[in-house]
Length: 319
Image (tube, rainbow, N blue to C red; front, side, top):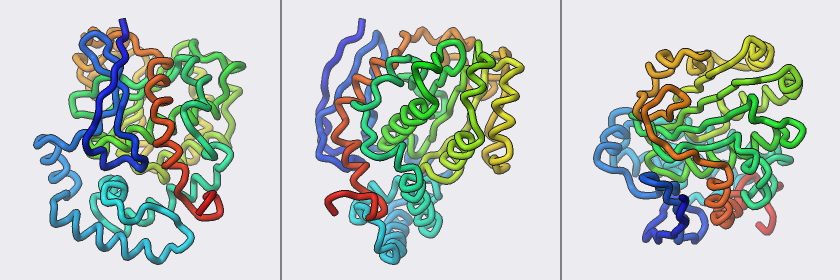
């Protein structure tokens, strides 16, 4: 049985709003919530080794990044917010020039695809969550990475839920993930479960949709996307993947792994003790529904409104 409660966080430095009370859903031994705490010593060490993070490097890179951003007068962002800028510095391993370019690409993508991003909040996107094809595991994997599961096969009723809605749901999830210090350092992985994909569903995919997704993943998200695992894919999935292939650069292409129904292959990347039984795992995990996640996200609408208030000035209201 799911139990809803709330917790108060004294310092949520990655938040852009003044939201300080956060929902948590207790599901047996698992808590479904935003993990906004500071890095533990273990992840501080990972950040040091993999991202060159140290107090000195952080201070130096923040100062350089702020100077670079002063050359972008049309870009409205919270330039004095350290945690906000660190969110972009971490995936760029504290190289200020790279972080500045990432910030510009992130907001340019939002401007280009304003039909997706304008006033995008969880409360306005209930349908994608009710479809129950998009969920984040309450647990992380053995490396501390967030696990997003997207089931675009037999569960996906394409006449009731468009691919644009699926994309909006992914954006909402990843914006939340980017608020978590551990996710900023450890990254995230995606499991695409394509079991039962039909010919009619493959027709929903277009080259323009494929290009938007690939551009977003490769260039416009400040998140360390470590792997995309394709599981249970039927032969017809090749038709879909062929739409994406022309836009893939080598780095992302190397991180897309096809497993079919071979669970041992999947377990080479994700230890079975961190996976539910349906993926050959040993984790006794309550089934997380999209509606349960939506319940949490809706209570954070205020934060999404704050996120939406920044960007290139022509797309910003009241600034």
